[in-house]
Image 1 (cartoon, helix red, strand yellow):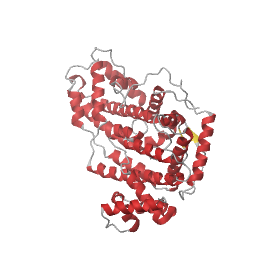
Image 2 (cartoon, rainbow, N blue to C red):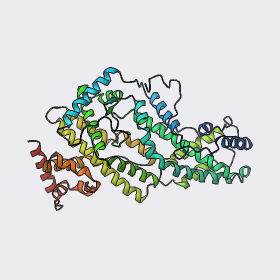
Image 3 (cartoon, rainbow, N blue to C red):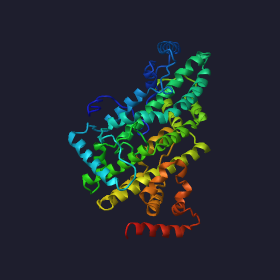
Image 4 (spheres, helix red, strand yellow):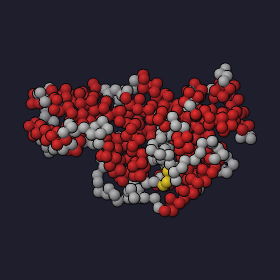
Length: 454
């Protein structure tokens, strides 16, 4: 059992990017073993230096940890506390596990005729929200690690410069900088844990965010979140579970059989993260706004909030914009392919598939479960904006070349459609790019109508 509703009962969870305040700065120092004075009292510089020396002596490594300075165990614990604070998270019952297993089994049978990619070997699973955090944490860590060193270094530079201006701390910059960089890493770990915990309350399946988050392919759904997804929909629970099982099973087949796809998606996110630039002037302004007097506890809390606004709103470079475009195109191709495969799998058997597909489109258009997380952490608007165009392209390929011809395009990244091809799907299929927009719309509509038998 990974989690129960009472696992973290009584623990106060600080709000982050999805709440009104960030973690107070004094709590960051406390987590590093540096006690600060009570509210309204000035900081005793000599006592602070003694605390720093003690902590550094204990650590022997200037408080650095594996993974660029973030304590990932702490970040994961923070995510689980956020999960526990946002509602009941019971371990799935045996009945729920049985229902999901049956749903996935039927979904796999339907998908056999809709794609050439085989079903994954691992048995289907029903997860709590906490289990989703546990099972996806390794991949999340891999994706966001490049962010940590950039943010920690930038904040360390600014804070060290500020400290050098204090007469009492003159000459102590070298001692302070490692600790201040660790503080920045800790702040990021807190933000990351808060964001991941919030995301765990929204996703309905293992890879709904369109990223390969599992270390091994497995179809997994979250019963608690499935129930929330179905609220307000005048549809049978069984149909909702089956439709979402189809989408997750199709996505897992794709990630499992197309070996380059998952690493490419992760590499795009890492590349984007490595190019992050932090607005140092904004951070300096945060310090300058505190004035020259010794900082009280209120000052530290205000400073932590102000720094977080700049710290987690990095500036986008031209290179990042180019990487973002490629990432969004690939995500759109993944979700567009899933749309087409599931549409074909359900066309004869499931009348409710149309309304459910529209629900998915609305959910995606509003940003989707992943967008707020990436936006708050790295300024990355992770939204497959052109999924419908991608679905049309895959449908055109299937109509012209069959299921095998459509899926064969995934065999190598060099054969994949580009963003330009999404503008002219029929041109990609035929190799003729001389279509006008009106002709393209008419031909595509006719082709898809004929394919559906209309």
